[in-house]
Image (cartoon, rainbow, N blue to C red):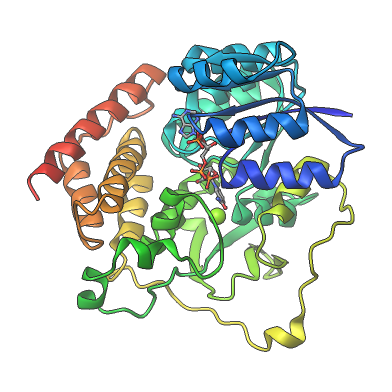
Length: 383
Ligand code: NDP
Ligand code: MG
């Protein structure tokens, strides 16, 4: 039995992870769960999975949970509680499904305690990829990606010589607004964005998929995970979202990973690696699919992709600024404070007012993250 800790268990990835684990009860024991403030969902999960330890980062939510739980489940609270949970739960594998840059410090703690990391969160690698990969190498632990594109690349690279990669193709569904003109994009509502055609996900990643920022973040994520140059990564729009990404080798051979669009597939593979175990998901039906398409992304209409590429080129603290600005600006869009087309404009202004620090320390990254959030808020207030 593997002892699993799920950080961010109440989110979209967290809930899908639990569905996979419940379908393979003889293999996994859930020893800990965490959320930010969604007490109701977390308590329901405690009821069915019976972990010994949980954490609610929000203190008042933790107090509420304590009142409703028996003594057989210990409730940690706050950022420190999350770190205590990592140690006390004695998990051997941690699923990192916290959203945003808040995942960085818990991730570093998981690595320091030499547990296997199943990584869904992408922001931590975007903002501190060099530090994370250095620590992983130092502690000699495994990091197994869940993000469907990274899972695909990882699978295509199994047993291959990474020095023989010509390039990788990161596929993107293109979001719901591909083909829209500027006027149409300007009038997009929050509701339009939240109904993604292929994936059901958390709110920020759903908006990021519509602006193509998600693909931009994934470029940086892939550079760190697979030690690639920016010039080796090509984004390709593939609306059917069946090919999850591809690797092209020097001899012209291209390997791709295909499956239906369901996050339980890459989650299960990371949990059961290197095995391909039976599940109840419907198989891909090529005859129903009929056609699949590939197109070049339109960076003029979706400038977030261009901004992410520029941040990747500049390196240092610039990806951290990109991510922090995006997190704040997406929140402002979701609260109807700005238009969809303002998202890249605000991020570009924040990036312009930052001079990237190369090879930053953890403190410099945390400081930059904070600075970028404040700066983004200032700019949004001017809209
Ligand atoms: P959700 O917003 O659905 O869930 C986020 C989870 O993190 C929740 O459990 C939430 O708790 C918790 N959380 C939020 N903020 C904090 C914080 N400050 N400290 C501790 N915990 C916190 O996100 P997703 O599941 O969609 O995404 C999670 C990560 O996985 C993201 O980095 C995303 O980019 C990545 N990813 C997601 C995919 C998807 O299909 N959803 C696909 C590929 C990657 P609470 O519920 O209490 O707020
Ligand atoms: Mg993805």
